[in-house]
Image (cartoon, rainbow, N blue to C red):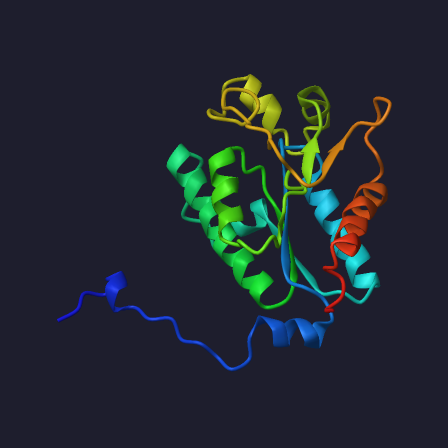
Length: 211
């Protein structure tokens, strides 16, 4: 008798309607825009602004927000190293499915470890993974801590939270991201300006049409 979960007894089932047919229907190419950066760097704000701009252009996208996913898909995970790795793996697998469906998937997560982001990139070998790290929100810790909308930095500084990224746990910035967003003359660009850069990149790379 075969045990449930034994990978040798699981087979991939191909369907007659594939990614190319779905992309033709939507007139766009499925991809993953992975937004990474410190807590408070503006990832969720950028993700929502980008989704809104794509919607205005008639393009279908979906935002996978790290905090939102911990209310459901990842509610059983904590913030230990192995839990963070599993958190990113799950989101990467879901993002891959959205891209295969022909959607522009916008994943917004701190995703602090380089190897975890690289593992997600490897899930989409056809260059449809865009680190807009990979979009990289390269905002200084001081700015993120000053914003501290959730009060997490204050708790981390008071040692009431352990393993907080940027304080007592490392953030490993991308080495070769497609888009890097940072302060301009010491000021954070407006969300619309930043999302506009991502949209321009998607247009230039042909993701907003199926040709």
